[in-house]
Length: 147
Image (tube, rainbow, N blue to C red):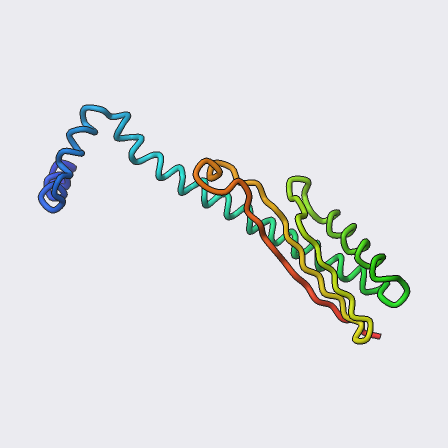
């Protein structure tokens, strides 16, 4: 089937589309904008959400490393010192553009458990024109000392 044949079938089934085709034929830049802008917005959103997922994976890895480093010190150091260790190791595992927004460290000395919850703020790119400027992603980990 030719392009003209497809155009005729669409015009027959969708009322008012013929007028849109006429406008786009007279003003090709308008037609391009009508189709390109939504496509660009979709691609920008996909990129931003992929960046957020990468940041979440980085945060999870950094938090796991931090908990493993801090659990060794749980018996010898205060809760504040353990929290500082977790924060220090977590920050080393993140990229500079990933801002650590929140970090909660809970130390249970009786059961020798360490729980960590963190949130990272990731800046968006083109999607910030129509939506949020930042996306917040969270990760958590729990670790128990073996002896």
